[in-house]
Image (cartoon, rainbow over all chains, first blue to last red; front, side, top):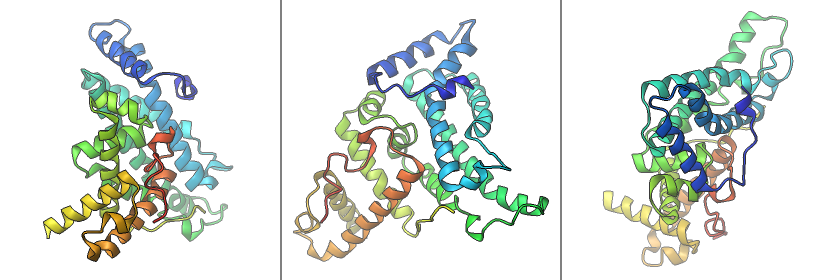
Length: 212
Length: 73
């Protein structure tokens, strides 16, 4: 998955990102090399998802990233790319905004799925492998908060969910998000603030959980 | 009840956007100061958890990146 390891290019200007993606989207219909184009189109989203998966794994479950489990973010991502490819083939986005809406939706689903799998892993191992010490009780449910946060994001109104997903999940700047949504950066900032207020209200009983 | 909630949201948005103090923003509604403080604390607590789950990629992805909302009351 070489494209997932491509370093983030901080030099690329926001308008370059949207122009580049639109160019790919325009060329996909009828293009003999559509698969290659779609893969390139996904590169940035996958790169960001790779970072989020790594972050979740190493910060919340560092023990699983060490021997004997050796779970790596790359292992977690392989299914994601396949699923995104299938989704892009089935629903061809017509513009950059639609592309990001699709990518964001899948990234939220994948992160939720990853959190669920990580929560299940310690329990499954303690049953199947008696040579490995049982996990600390604090391991169980560590990413329940993550799953609750993702569910709350999913439940937000469209405008707030879109801006939150572009900025916090995709990691785009306010300028890039504004370009994609066709609004000014002030509007992006206002919607981000509103999304945090809505999430805080929905998650007012959420308590911080320390990593093991 | 909905009006009160809308007012609370408006005050909180103003607080986050302008970086003014709670006292200044709630000058016309001093009775709401405790609830505004409570909600603001929730937002800041959540911000820390969101940062852990979704690390900011660029400086302006952080709430209060204009230096406003992060100022102490």
